[in-house]
Each structure stands twice: as C-alpha cells, then as structure tokens.
Amino acid sequence: MPKVTYTPAKGLVQSSGAGFVINHLKSTSGTVNLDADTFMTVFTTTSAPTLPSSAPTGAIKILISDTAADTSVQATNATTAVTMTNIGDMCICIFDGTEWVIGRSLT
Image (cartoon, rainbow, N blue to C red; front, side):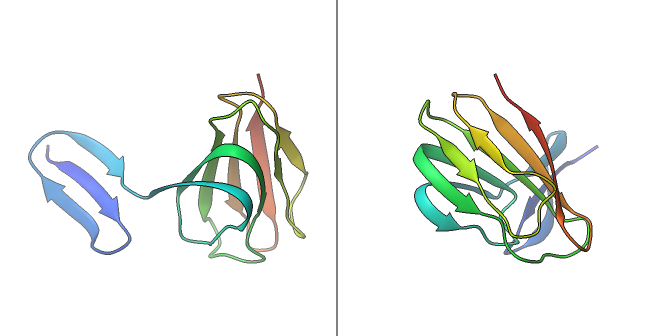
C-alpha cells in the first residue's frame, strides 16, 4: 500500500512507503485569527486564537499548546471556550455546519 500525503497545494499525493500524512501544520503565537484550511496549529507562547466564523461542514482543526503560558481559544460560534495552560494541552475542533464543536484534553 502506498503512503498518501495530503497538502493544500497538491491534494492527495502517493509515494513509496505506508500510511497517511496530513502535511499542513502552522506554528503561531499572540492574537491570531485562524483560517478554515490549516489542519493543525501549534501555539508556542501566550496566544489568543479565534476560530473562523465558518468552514466547510466536517472541517477539522487540531490545536496544540507547546507552552505553559495561557492559550485561550475563542469563537463566536463554538460549543465551549477553552483555555490551554500546559504543554501538551490540545483541542480537536469540528465544524458541524453551524458551529465549532470543541473536544479537549487538558493536562
């Protein structure tokens, strides 16, 4: 079975190897408006990210804290607000067509 990699620029790309990789990662900090396209965002210092107001139904965003400083995830249309305070805290956000549903794992 080939390795399949997804990138926003090329879509699905097959290569030798095995597995499935999503190659769409962004590191950021500070006050930032997240886009609807980036799959994974890693926060490196105190951050106040805002989820986009809309996205395609089923869009998935993974947010990970790589800092012990507060990262307060905000959205005008989310099921809950989340503050990540430790390295390794994370949220998985899925847009259900109306709002972001946020699952979280906080250490």
